[in-house]
Length: 177
Image 1 (cartoon, rainbow, N blue to C red):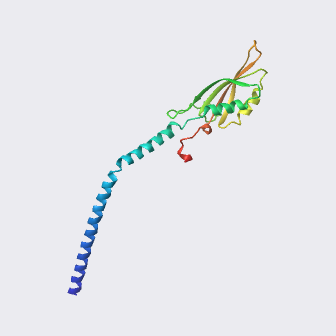
Image 2 (cartoon, rainbow, N blue to C red):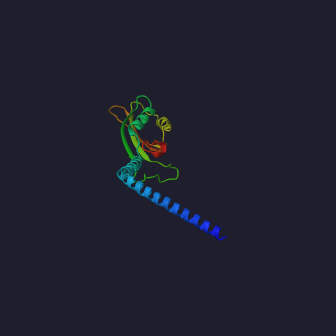
Image 3 (spheres, rainbow, N blue to C red):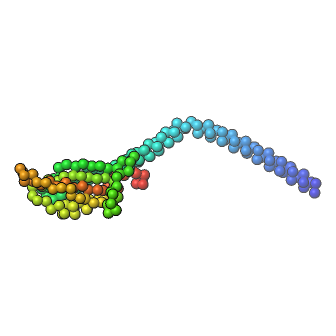
């Protein structure tokens, strides 16, 4: 029995020495890897800066709308001979929420477009409004006034239109990637 205990003690002592040698080798390897990793600290910092830049682009452009293309679509809905004369746009920004409607019947919106359109004949405003409904992001449109220029006989209609987030460009959105 004493021989078995002595043999077990010697075996565990040998295993302990082997484990300590393996631990020392791994600690040396870890120290070496940490030293090698410190060579790339600038690259890691640059990668973090790039991630921050991408996040800033996403937030900064989150409310971006390609207005030229959208206004061309508005113009395309108008009947032949009708042209957009003036356009005023109010839209959301990444820093402030857009003012919402004050009545429960008004849908959520991210921008308001007020435009005037001119025509030589008496306009069919309901048809114009109906055509606007097919635009992306359309929420609602309301005619503000109709005037006639006595000198030229032309008519000008002012319309206020609201659009929702479907009009956002999303070019830096991480959801698309």
